[in-house]
Length: 296
Image (tube, rainbow, N blue to C red; front, side, top):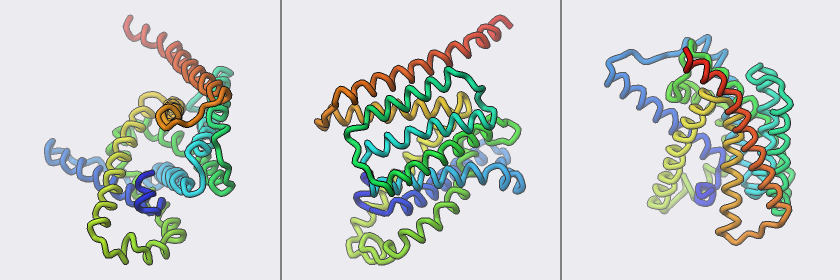
């Protein structure tokens, strides 16, 4: 959010973040090749186009639309609307046979979605453009994380390591977001005093430093998200992300003096209950397999 305040071009910032992540992944791969004296993994072109393109493109549009929506809506409305991504992730997970159809899963998704809507309901300032952007981002998030899980769990494809995955997906992500960035922000960016027409070069360097720092944080976040998806599931990642969003809103209300109504508090409790239920169900699902392995 601070980046948008100093450099109000969300799609261009997203594009620069993707370039930063690709550069970091390339540097790490080169260092590993030099240090270990081994050949770098390269995905064949035909497989690269067929398998990585969907994940990369949907990821770019998910992130781009999400960042763009902050120009129109509040964090509360964004959080409330983006909570629908868990429904899309469940839908695509069942469609791609990553999750089995279970009543308990539907109950968990229902509880978390209802809880999050109640938690942020009264503080939301509605804006149709922002709402549509976040809803599109939620739909694309379902495609993004289910295809990412498919790639992560196919060990023979060589994309189970987050650095390899980031290296191979960022070009697709950058190519997907660049046309949007040029069409929507291109003319403003070229004529803006924040960039090409600036006379304050010190401020420009500071702005670019903020953007680079955001790219570094995005790199670390994507690595951790990918590790969760590869070892657990896209649904688990989505639920963990919702817990983060709920905690963020709760802390903002606590420290910034925002009012929390009884409706908001009820939503918070329902949301936490849904997340706890998911953790318990996952634990019960994995315990038998752990016991079998220990006996072997």
